[in-house]
Length: 190
Image (cartoon, rainbow, N blue to C red):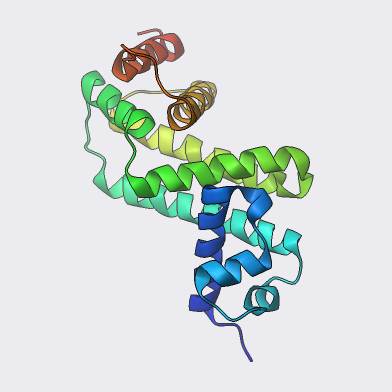
């Protein structure tokens, strides 16, 4: 029987949900079947090994991130001033919508898992490339002529801020907008 693309997508969406909700360690064929509401053995028919499941899930996370980049291209205001740029970055880092939050948590799960599984490194590089593309698009909309090094620096700093905001309670008086302003000043010297 030929593979069913809708079922494959449902399997990979369920795998992402598991990675976000319980971590990569909980990502098993059986858990995916249960989460997707599929008969036992369905996931292993699509992905014979756990590594194949992990690689396909990582590739799906990459694909979702690239779709986000495409969607972002169509809605970015142009030109943006410095205040609009800072407000957008602050919202992305400190107040993401639920879909963005889950997509980002999945990215971070795979970043960490790739430390233990070198086979996942190509997906991590692709995720970083997509994140840099996102930052480059946002900066271009703001009229910022950023070098690749500056885009890379900004992306890494924003990843760290996002990780911190998603995983650690922020102290009283935490002002993400002021922090984003300082990051922009540090990277671009403005």
